[in-house]
Image 1 (cartoon, one colour):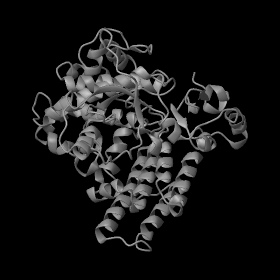
Image 2: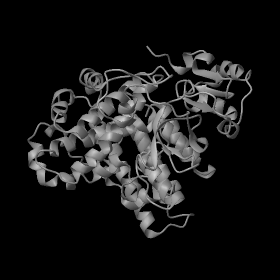
Image 3: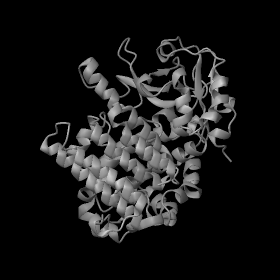
Length: 478
């Protein structure tokens, strides 16, 4: 059984790397700025002040470098222990040292820095990446180029691989496709949504045998589930990123031409995309709904773009799907009229605060009529989403969460969120509190709480009171 952070000895949670002179949180798997360690223990691990003293006494013994100094320090070994290893990309243009973990970011780099479109395996290549810090100090680095051992090239390119592959010098053992599929059908299937176990254990894998994009999505979610269960074993996270990067282009090809043959697989994939996206966001710093580097219109993350457009994509096959093997996934999301509902007192207090925020839109800051309407609509949809979640009680599940508010907010709201408008960020904070009801799902967990702190960090001081109130509600168990 995994110990709670507060029960761990300081050296079990915080490890010192004397080569780079940083403190690394073993559970969060990134380095901490010296002045931020106390806040990290408080806000992320919820360790009380009196319990934090041994941790602070422990780290005070070590000399620590500032992030800028660590980032510019020569790299003597790779990979650095206790840091995640990502399957990323390295620019191959002369002396350019740009590194990233997204093809879209690399394409954007080539357009802005090199003045033209770039191409995989010609202008960039796969590379294993790490980063010491997150947020504003995130800088990827990679190790020296080495000739791959037998099987490594197949793993990086996503081709058929041997049963177990050992990466050079780092000792990581990578699970095979058969092992990942077996884990999905013996464990992961039962963790997706309660009441759908048979569907995910049998129907979806059966459909996936004829559709590689769905099979790779299964493998990605299985690997991500293993990464959540074994956070210190980096190979699972690498596998998850690898298989998802293979699945997405194949899926885009499929949705470009929906047929009777692939419509069921597309529906299954869109649901697994939600599982993967929420689970993977724990390792990213995006705002869950949007990403300014997203290939989708209006900066929507892929899971939201395809969920919002699913009815259009699959509309011609609605009857076939509703009577097919995945008919259980064809649930409608109806949000009730809040004026007709009796709210619990604790929820009523929360919603009053949200209504106060909406009223404040008409005071102080100058907003266009379009912006005001976008915020008011998003706010009222949130109120209704909270009521619906309360009505469903223990039956409220991830599909209810993603088919409610995110599906209904306007594109003007998502554009304002991409611009990090404070009111848009606060409204997203309220959605985080709604997701708290689903923290028992491994791919959600306490990620919404971490997102609340990320939102707070992007707001001016005058807006912090709203997020502080949400964090308090989280801690009170609302």
